Image (tube, rainbow, N blue to C red; front, side, top):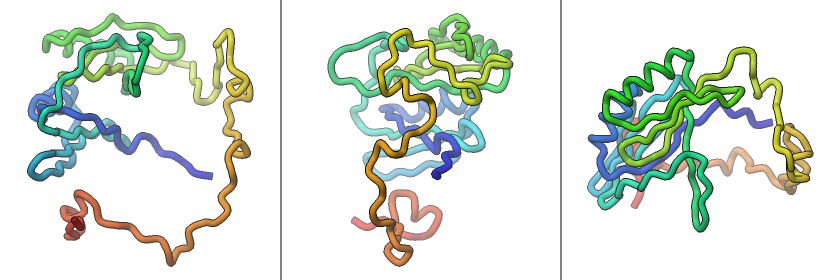
Length: 196
């Protein structure tokens, strides 16, 4: 079975990489660990944790999105509500709240969600962000909880994956057919230039 080890990276967009670096690196303290780019775009990566990154593409003409409160229902085409970053200690929430407020960013009160305590804000690009701390002795990863008063039939099947709901793999890719192609950034680490 596949074992996931976290979010390798979330890829967001910005029209102002310098302002984005100031926020994510210099205010939040996430190290800038990789930077790719050429005429017309940049792609920079910030370290969230030992296993997780957040990345930003900078493209000309990208505009800051208008604020939409986290979790507020919308209609029409939509793809993303917010991203939550975990913090090690409850004290970290208060430190972040104070730093964001001092820097002039709107930040919520600390909210108790039962299994996490959270604060909510927006980055300079209008991206809705949450910072969460796990409530001590409440671990939904070890003990899943479902409090939906009207769960769907699929939800009632439980927390464990039901792999039989999808077609089985009929043919695995043989080792001799497995080829990895160079992409943006490969030239930085392998000296291989991306084709085209």
